[in-house]
Length: 111
Length: 121
Image (cartoon, rainbow over all chains, first blue to last red; front, side, top):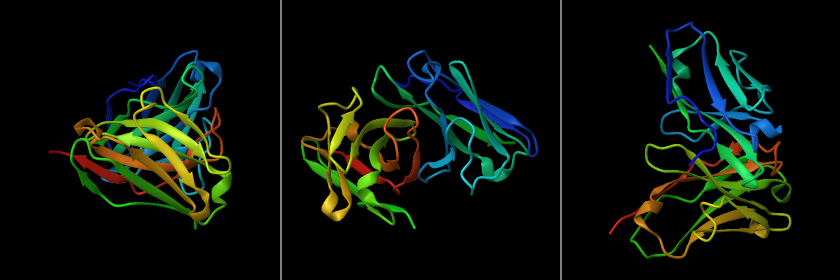
């Protein structure tokens, strides 16, 4: 049972901008814990997309960006491409569980 | 090149034991935490627990405490996840992933390819 809530799905046409929300609580994101994002393409292992709320590994295009405010965070994808069709997960640290937690996951569909 | 290479797919019967592995290379194995993550068929990611190879400090998610054992053999740069008595509900893909920190700054920058465990009578 995840403590980070994401919308089950979002969709957009090629070139559009989509956002994915990640809602936590006072024991994780709201407590100041960083939020990280992962992309999981079909049949493959997750890959790090955003770390420390808004930082991108060098291999990740700048179409992907992250933000955090209060007990929530968001991932934005601009200039949506067919290759972005995947599942996306947020992750943070929960002090009440003394461990990491993942979001419920969001499937991005490119129309 | 950093790599985490996991052991292959397993098919087991309920009640059997199992130990899967995750071998790290291309970095200082003792200095990074190794986490295990479960993904049941068609479902999301679940953090199971984490171990620090340097001193074997281990933390478990409350959901998995007592259900699995996480261990490490730092002499061969390998972390393990084991079950003493498998259930059908353990059917899932299990990933290992490395992290520099255990707490609020801890993200998983490299992942293994996943080990599919199927438990069926």
